[in-house]
Amino acid sequence: MMEQLVKFFHGGGSEEDFEADEKLVSSLKKELGADYVLQYPFLPNDGSPDLGRRRQISSEIAAGDDGVILVGHSFGASMLLVCLSESDVRKHIGGVFLLATPFWKGEEDWVQPFKLNADFAEKIDKNIPLFFYHCRDDEEVPFEQQSVYRKHLPWASFHEVPAGGHQFNNDLRKVAEDIKSLGERGLL
Image 1 (spheres, one colour):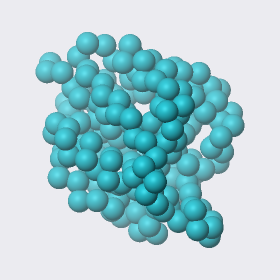
Image 2 (cartoon, rainbow, N blue to C red):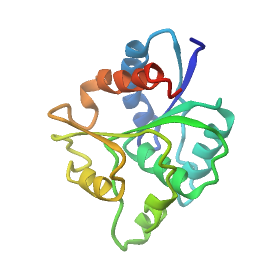
Image 3 (cartoon, helix red, strand yellow):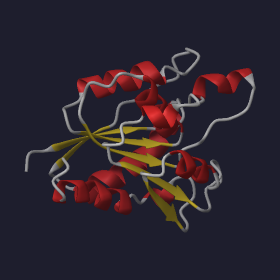
């Protein structure tokens, strides 16, 4: 097998957030093994209204190989989903894996740049394998938000993790198993 490219988008926008998610990246890298190349770009809060994520994530996807695997955690997961539903992605994407994905709602000005469009589900390519993971004891993003995604994206795979908090106890073994299963099923 040729090396498979995986890009991981961290939560938040600070160096502290980036460093916290490095433990998730290390777990995923260890579990995937040598057949996978994991890239972990720092996506700083650059002061733009959407923290630069649409532009930054679109650039990272465009720079990736066809068949790239995309993984996002928390804010990075929600902005990846926004990007995939609003941008004209020209790369073949092998799979999308979203961890502790917030569903932004409300009328406050600050939340508007993060919200998905009402028709976001119609814009997501149903041919791309889409996986959601959420810990029941997540203290930052309520577990119930996964049910909103279930309603809108019924073709996606949803995984309820009994415990692990917002950081999944820094154990992404299940995510790695699901990524590997795509290759085993010939989907990569």
